[in-house]
Image 1 (cartoon, rainbow over the protein chains, first blue to last red):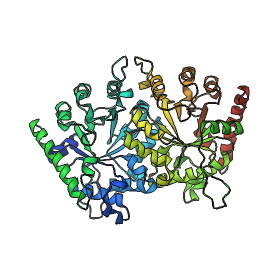
Image 2: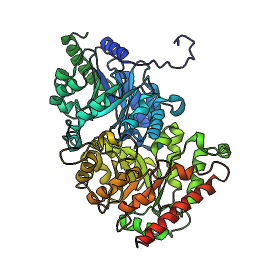
Image 3: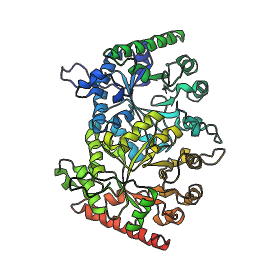
Image 4: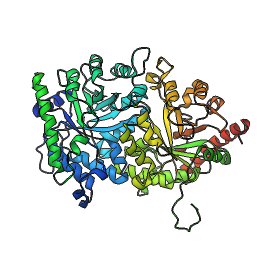
Length: 291
Length: 291
């Protein structure tokens, strides 16, 4: 496909494989993912004059940060809570993200095989659903056939929950099984379903000391790391153990970026915070010899 | 609140607690839940003339079966796969279900606390989202704070995944932990979060022999049982071990009811299949002395 087939050409959505993702990271000296989790009550008041204030909020955030991050991750809950208008906002937000930026539907889906196939259509098949994300977060509890339908989109990614950033991670994920902790089993077993070209894991930044262990189990996989910023995780700690030869990290920041300001300059404030994170990341990548 | 405040009165949504649910079961001599999982390619061709064929399909199914079942369970995946129109269809379908019938959003959600609160709004708070289901299915992997926000709607239910009907159930749910199988731990630990007035479990009908064990762990909880019919589970087997003093079972049938026919008489065929199931259930309830 060529991008030069006229001004009315459709947006081109390239396959974003591991090599291309690492290229983006090197080009931007950033492995920042911005979480687009808008709450109507928290967005700047001057946006309320727009027909769709939340969409305007997202668009201005994207425009202000797109050269500093390599991924955007809308969490579907924030959109679903706003009903039909929210679902439309999710679609329009996805459309507004430049095609060369990795897009993650943070949806934490998972169901029996034929139903997971419907979820795969919902987030990967833009002809059917209006959205064609590069990746989706998936919950592992229902096992292989709940994950496989997403993997059958061979140009897309599954980001499986492994060790999450919330307090409740200890209820089941740290349970000792006969073979190891449950989250270790999730990584060990799921790594038989797909390789690191299609499978990432969610590992909370608040789980610093477990990163070394996770890198033993998943040396080549990208890890999506939420919890830096508002949830208290440390970027340096995450990188000490999490970085690999293709970076291997997408570090998500949502609240600390998108609510950096709440006045008319909210997008500039968001940019400042994204820039601060990008510069910290650039230093880390340089120190590791990756750029 | 009174239902007799005029013909323009808003639909009244009663709290559907365990006692009321059991009353419905006794009145209808049925513990049937109909799964509303429409696929555009499978719905009768004569419906394609409608502006929203899937909604028309659902409405006719509801009208034809509402005296034979006590619950409807749309699985959100089927709606999301159809994009914005699908989400609208989900809302309109929920609106069409009579207020005295238990409604389950089969959404299998679950996320960190503040995000699960958004999902709770999405499915429970009709002022915010347009939908006010009585219950939602939730995945347990992220632990207590991923479930609690749903429980904070004290007039609503969480239906937690325990032992599912799909092949992948053996990947993690049957894993031996130091205290028992993982699904047993899910039941044991979650039963500290809420009692049987707000907490049900999903147990696949294809797991017949495990029902006895589950009833030991959760003697008073309702179990939502998918997998009878197309997935091969046996109603008699499920009831032998699953029935308790308040029935304690909601048996879901989707494909075998909603696709019983695919001609102009599809709704009558669906009714025939629902009636066959209801009559089998009536016999079981009578034999158990519950009606």
